[in-house]
Image (cartoon, rainbow, N blue to C red; front, side, top):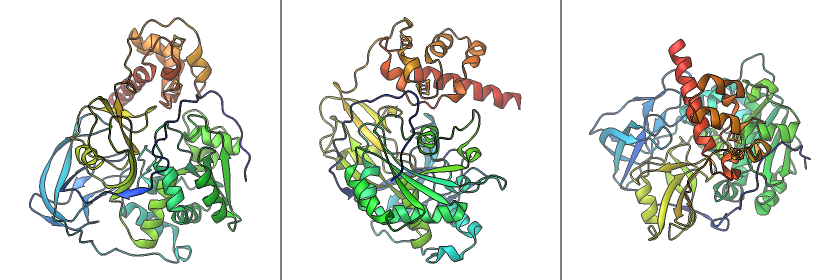
Amino acid sequence: MKKAFKFYGGVYPPENKITAEKSIEVMPVPDKVALPLIQHTGIKCKALVSRGDTVLLGEEIAEAQGHITAPVHASVSGKVSDITAYLHPYLGVPVEAIVIESDGKDEKVKPKRVYDAYFRCAQKELISAIKDAGITGLGGAAFPTHVKLSPPKDSEIDFLIINGCECEPYITSDDRLMQEHSKEVVEGAKIMMYILGAVKCIIAIEDNKPLAIEIIKNIVFNEPNIDLAVLKAHYPQGSEKQLIKALTGRVVPSNKLPFNSGVIVNNVATAYAVSRAIKEGETLTSRIITVSGKGINNPKNLKVRLGTLLSDIADYCGGLTDDLAQIVMGGPMVGISMPSLNIPVIKGTTGILFFSKKEAIKREYSDCFRCGRCVRVCPMELFPNQLSVFIENNYIEESKQFYPMECIECGCCSYVCPANRPIVQQIRFIKYKICQEQKTEK
Ligand code: SF4
Ligand code: SF4
């Protein structure tokens, strides 16, 4: 088992992993799904179907455009009833979505090809199969996986890290996936190692998941090139740069990506999806999420079809409690507040949290009194206090000298701030402004 290095900062929020003992349940097919044409980091897809068309489960219904993109597939069989705007959970704006009314038959499209002996195939063939399956990073970032597995030719990748840390409080879906589908997770890791030519793979799990650790340990025992690393539960351990530092001692330079340090990081759910795509010919039409919080009657770990509306999930989980105060998509540290239940699950959805009034305490914020707590917990070693004050006063140029683009939006600074300052939201805003500026300059 591998020993880990420490990273600077971070916090230890209370875990609240109330669904840790709940096995993954498969949610019945919903009556309809709404599949947004953009569910990944990158360019929006182009619809291949029109209203009235019939589609099969797994059929490609929106094609990838450009380089950083991933196609969308029908997650139920049935009829396209509409192509209309739905509020995008992460972009916060309405985005065109293909709406399919299920016929209840779940008739599947024939898989294009199954690669049983993948190690006899050309790497580029496997990359193209992963692209065709529409796989994106399922840990939340939704970066297209085929792009991540195609680093520039001159970069030598020696390490593949499979991220099973799941350091967000409340979320347990990756823990359950590792317990219930461990063989496919390891198989996915081996496929990705082969594609990258990586000599070593490390599966990283935090020490609050003893069953997953035991199961994975037994499987990798016979795999000389795959190590298991057990890391101390410490938020944001699952963040790419912190994980690379903890496992290899390497620091990803400012403005650079993990491949610049010879490492590629993929989440356990992505490894599972890669294994299903290569060995079963499955396209990405469902994912495992955690539904939790005291605002829902029956918290669960669920396998849901992509495009399932939050309202259907809430009904399936026994309905909302009377003291529901807030709905969050993702974990409580980096998740985003949802204004309604008419929003679909997309590829990057790791969980849906229904917070009661007690859990979703909203407090007024006050001036920064320079206690320095946010500086001491920032894992990127930034000055969140300076950024917060500059952004609040609209000093955009001045804020740039404190490297806002390096912020990984982990939320540690907001979590510890005794003045309740919305630091991470302010930094997100300035990052958006800077990106807009850069686009206009081009
Ligand atoms: S400034 Fe960014 S990276 Fe630093 S603690 Fe705050 S959210 Fe995390
Ligand atoms: S934690 Fe809050 S009050 Fe303290 S320095 Fe940071 S922003 Fe200011």
